[in-house]
Image 1 (cartoon, rainbow, N blue to C red):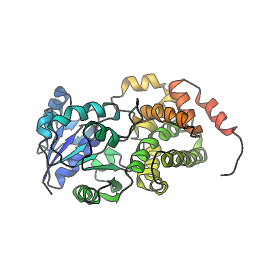
Image 2 (cartoon, rainbow, N blue to C red):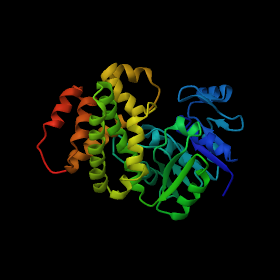
Image 3 (cartoon, helix red, strand yellow):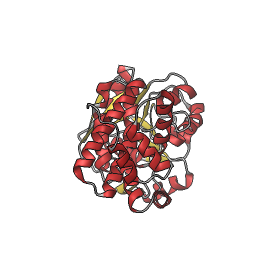
Length: 327
């Protein structure tokens, strides 16, 4: 394995992975799309917007030159889903066929495509893997123990990235179910918005536990129809990521849901620089579920709250008054 790794995307997750790999002895080059922010990162050695308080080692090379990062023998992509296709188009002229690891969790808002599908459409079939699971960036950066999944249809590629990233505070498992792992990482963000709404309304543990359980059921229902395997959703990239995203105070999607109740969504979005992936995935998966006639009452409720400005309390009543049935 080469000792040089390029990371595209200097958000919280990209920065965290660069720090983790730097500690393992890899030569890391971190690419930030905006030259002015790349300059701030180089000078301050801190990601003041997306990972404040965490030191970026001086040995990590930070650049806004995409050609430079594309020289690396291994690449990791940690770009928000709404910019993902544009960045893939930008990098493909410099791509040399090296293995790619996708760290983005989401679906393309216009097409509902998974990130691996976008790569295949824009570049073709490439050596590719996905990393997903309960990986709140700040906790990983602080060295707290966690586990995640590397999914690839190519066993060797998956095992290579498993070895590259595994360390004392991050244990990686492999999985061949790329669709299931990607869908779990995307869909849990939608459910997390509702978990935040429950927190904002101070409805308690029973409500949240019931909601998360039924939310996972919807994830499984959609995921199976879209090509994922059911057992994947009971693992780290499904249930594991769902739990952490629905409870962590650092979860952007949960925090957004809470803010809907407490301060209003427009006020929250005006102040935050973070990508709230669940907003875009909500719209994508709502369109898919209607087109394919998939029953998704919770996702439908989140859609109505986020995009139609419906009252959360009214949507909760609507869910509770649904036709009674077996579990």
